Length: 225
Image (cartoon, rainbow, N blue to C red; front, side, top):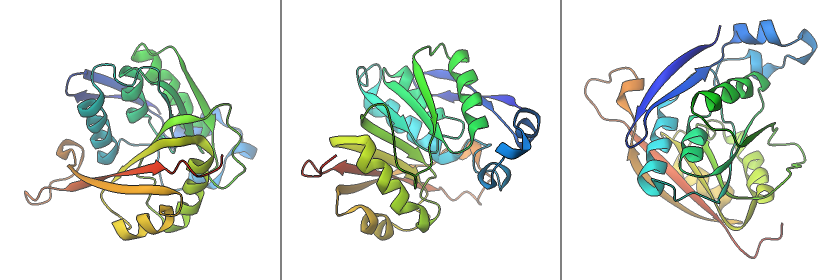
């Protein structure tokens, strides 16, 4: 069943996050509405170190309220930590995921963090993207885990971002920087920054520090939306 985990972040302090589990799917979702993404291995039912790292990156660059007035979309949001941090930094947030039960957890987390103005939507990266608005920023952590997903993510960014908008993504470089750049270079200016991954949420690795990567994708203004 669902449980709440407290993440302590610089400047913001304790951030409670509700984490749904597969048992919540069994209880809340009828059999005909369960899908492979929901019932498969749980990418979505945990807090990933990369999401903590992306959250700290946002705090470092936008505290206290430098995202005020910005429309931000988090894709593959899972527990939604980075989006909740962005909302606390002033962003107007939309949380999206393919797994509906995760969005129920995000709604509960927003309530616990006194976030009242936000939207949620289910989003399949390979479907026709029909969003109610376009965004200045799209966020994601651990969404570059499979190369076959990259064209779908490019599809989302091309539709959801306004010209000059930015995508910020974080992971431990699972596919390699060159692979990420290859799939996005036609429509986006690409840059990458190394950041430390939060060690409190991972198993010890013999004292060796782990490095995460923040990928910045700037939508070229010549692209037609």
